[in-house]
Image (cartoon, rainbow, N blue to C red; front, side, top):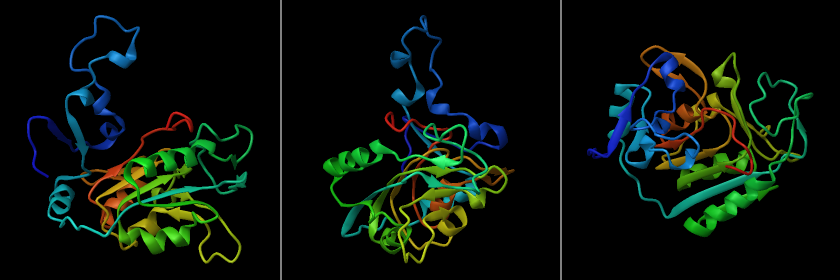
Length: 235
């Protein structure tokens, strides 16, 4: 990655990892009644985050591999899937009185919109399984997942992305952080359109262990992640 004046790399530590630096303003606004037009840093600079200096050096030396297949997009279905082991309800779509995650009707729209722009392979509904993703992820340059993300507040390695669960499926439909670490893939970009994919346990000097970190550690050059809950329609 060749850096210029427009590019900023941020290596934060501890609580600073929770700050979205890209939405800081470059000057003090005169008015605060129109948030859309405030002078956010992201409007004039490209912001990159790295968990540590050593990790950044390692990622920069990874070869850029051109693959025949460019984009793999998935939008699993969640038919009121019950997650009794969920410790934190990180989605706006989660019912406040139960541990049931509702379906995400706009996830499929997002996937089709991305496909219209970039092409590639789409897996939706019953085809968007954990097994299919694991088998196909290593063949694509860009991975796009529009699904539920569950951040485990006690053990970040147990945070998970939800896939469609079908009968006789060898996997359980829950892709945990520790499983992502063991995947074999070399994607150029992973888009995690789910909640709290960048949230997790912070280790001094090494950054945050999260779903996003799992993809970086298993071979991805870059990951687009979230630090909070996201609304289905907005995302």
